[in-house]
Amino acid sequence: MIEITDGGISTTVQDLGRFGQYHIGMPPSGAMDQFSHEVANALVGNDPDAATLEMTYAGANVRFEEDAVVALAGAKMPARIDGETVPMHEAVRVEAGQELETEFASEGARTYLAVTGGIDVPEVMESRSTYTLVGIGGHEGRTLEEGDELAVADNGADLDAVVGNSAPEEHLRDFTTASVRVVVGLCDYRLTDESRERLCDVEWTVTPEADRVGYRLEGPELEFVEREQPFGAGTDPSNVVDVGYPIGSIQLPQKPIVLMRDAVTGGGYATVGTVISADRDLLAQRRTHQSVTFDAVTVDEALEVRQAIEDDLEAIRDGLER
Amino acid sequence: MTGERIERTDLPEPRYEFGGDDHVFVELDEAMSFDANFEAMAITQQIRDRDLEGVTEICPANASYMVRFDPDVIHPETMVEELKEIAAETDISEYSWKTRIVEVPVLFDDPWTHETLMNFRDRHQDPDATDLEYSARINGFDSVEAFLDAFVGAPHMVTMVGFVPGLPWCFQMVPKSEQMEVPKYVQPRTDTPSRAVGFGGAFSVVYPVQGAGGYQLYGRTPIEVLDVDQELPAFEDSMVFPNPGDILTYRRIDREEYDAIREEVEAGTYEYTIEDVEFTPEEFFEAPHEYNEQLVGVLAG
Image 1 (spheres, chains in turn green, yellow):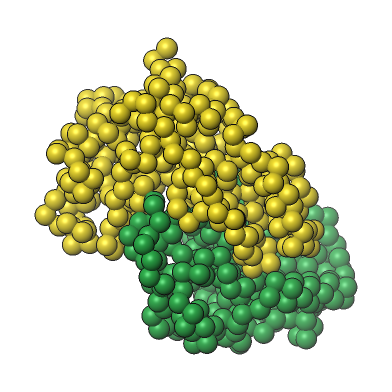
Image 2 (tube, one colour; image 1 turned 60 degrees about the horizontal axis):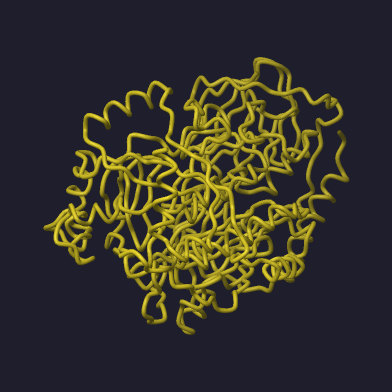
């Protein structure tokens, strides 16, 4: 059992996500930065789908009622146990009664706290991920608050063996980059040639409206090709007959919104491209007021990046005890 | 009115588009039509039946569909080839599917959506009219009454579910000449009551939860489309009620009936009025009004 003594700004229980329900409007949820979630789990001897705590901007404080091994991965977040500094990307021991305290992330937006065994909340549709909009999954379907108590599962891992596990820097991802790679497409025919080029040429800024549902970006106006609107689309040039939105897709009500893991699953705004699967993790680590640029790639290039990230994860896992 | 058929639409070549490295989006047409929607439903049903390894989401939409897959298991190009093969084998003329006809009681011009729409007049095309008055006028009706008669006069088919869990987009089952169309709000509202019944583009919707929205607001239903605790009998299998392909028939109710139904819903005892039916596009296209009467008649019987 662990007890939340301070919930931070927005801390939720997340795993790899909830699948097979998108067609009824249920987004996958799950860790926004899947790579860091998997690294945190690997360090403490968990399977990739064990539930972790996703802490946004400012971390939570957590008291442990039993001996445990924990690891932090993702955004750089200063942390201490009884005054002793806890390094990032390393499995450390916590003794019963001790408290882990975290502060504001100094780089990146989301830090994952994994505990050996995984956070044990009931599964909803085969996932422990929190989806706050309708209040399901995680702990009571909501962000964590002071006083919440969460069970930790026992996966049989040898705590003594996993302590000291660490992830080499060269296999971790660089959150300082503003560039996220996109496959341009979907309904990009709605944009003028000039605007389609601008999409990937200009620097966008993350607005304060950037959360698990989507990242709203600020930048220059993009223009749509003039046309007589097709039947059922609605009158605004940005409107299309309602479509399904891919996770990572860039939609254009006027300014771009990139849909993240608690996405609205469909709607009537033109979508013009999709952030590739590997780089959704990077975008999830961009902070309000930071810049973002879209770099157009082909599907094959996207698959190469995906493979390289999987190789990094594999290399991290190869160096670990469990 | 009787005798008019549903004009068939010749669909253009579908556009297959990659959504990153893990989605394929297929646009069947830019415009809404029953042909495009039935094609989307038939193809996605075939994809589901094939149970392809690596496919994680299969999502029919109004005039398009989308699949999500694990690119480590199935290459995006292979995915597109599979979809093209399935599309080539699908012919909606020979198709029929089991679906449900469902009665949705609605209190039109209710106090809750009325208060909301009055609060957001500054975001509307016509600040001096209500959403119902505006919709009636631009669709050529003499009165709100006549507009509502048309709105409830023929059933609406669920052509897509999404945005948030449980929100149905519904397309009225009438020939194009009788289809109504309205714009969405000039600026979306930041608030909409839960269970509000709205209309935008050519689609009616029921908002599952309170939140933002841009559709014209007409009324409120006492029944739920989302029940996360699955307490109501109609939610035994899923926390979301509507499925793509369901046929909804809106029924006008008064405040007294609204309150009575709402009480039963809140007690978790309300039994939805539902019947299973077989839907045959070909018969519907030939004589939509007669076909709809038969469908709705199943509920009365």
